[in-house]
Image 1 (cartoon, rainbow, N blue to C red):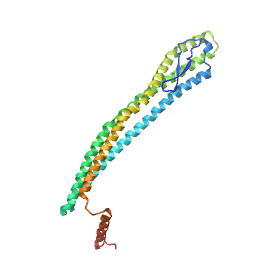
Image 2 (cartoon, helix red, strand yellow):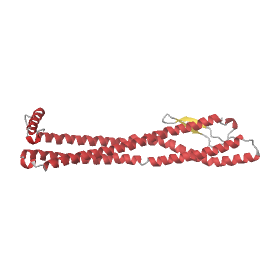
Image 3 (cartoon, rainbow, N blue to C red):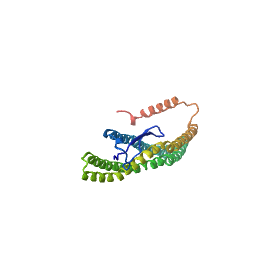
Image 4 (cartoon, rainbow, N blue to C red):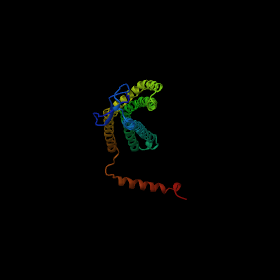
Length: 280
């Protein structure tokens, strides 16, 4: 009597070919249905191909999640550094002696300082929103991968045990069927049965759940990315208002950018004409 599992390819709901088998090592059927060695080898290869395909997609997803979380953290850190630097610059200008001597310059720098502080406040709100709705969900999503990888390691160990005992069964099956050989064959099959069942259970669970986990990524991340877009829209809308107001306060009627540039060059030329800065 033969004890090998019989493959039964079936198409699952997603259209992918998965290997299902209707018999385990405890099933006994006529030797006329015994799988040839080549057929059994192909079945084992198909099992591994199915698994490697699904696990490969999750490995890629894990790497992409880590990279996105890292890039988002860099982006928010840079945003905060930018607005803090802008506030510091305006404060440095306020402490400039020119502000004590020129009321118009003081008014201009005061307006700039207020705008920079408003910008920093809105920027902090944006970063807090992104931290809460994007970075933290990315971190929580990434935290499940260690458990997944551990389950894969347990499945790999079960597969190695399964292969080792299967090889032992095959070795006795190839020998002359004497009494002692049949006894050892029976014992080897008994040892193999729970190990094979354990591997089948682990393999089936992973093949069932890995595609579901991978498919859930869109529903999980879509609210985060929508929140990211909203946070950016709100921030830049406020920046448009802030700098629009600042422009109205600083603009001198009738002065174009070209005129300002010519005036600055003229004043710089006057400074260069001074003997203390003249070239030797």
